[in-house]
Length: 151
Image (cartoon, rainbow, N blue to C red; front, side, top):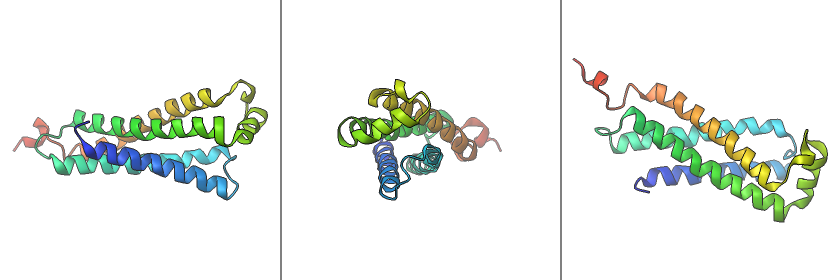
């Protein structure tokens, strides 16, 4: 990967997800599924910083589609790393939590660590694309496009 900014903020995003999950586990709120909506703020932060830093680094060549690419790849790194962490966590570290999910979550009897990992990946990438699109609407006035060079 040529852009170390993408990797940096993708891994920071994953660290944020993991810290948030473990903190919720520590205070006993890891079973409140609705709190996962707060992960969107971690995505917004990671994607926003990645796009902003990439724009600052290459202001002359950074276009709208480059911003979309940076945001989606940053999201992919963060979300995939977290999804893999959750797979190993549920499969090997906290098997009792996996059993709780099977018993208490709607359609839980059909879930296993792999299906939860895939679900997190799909949900996280959808959120990442949405966050990227939102941020690029703000940043598009700053990127290198023909419209921004008109007098």
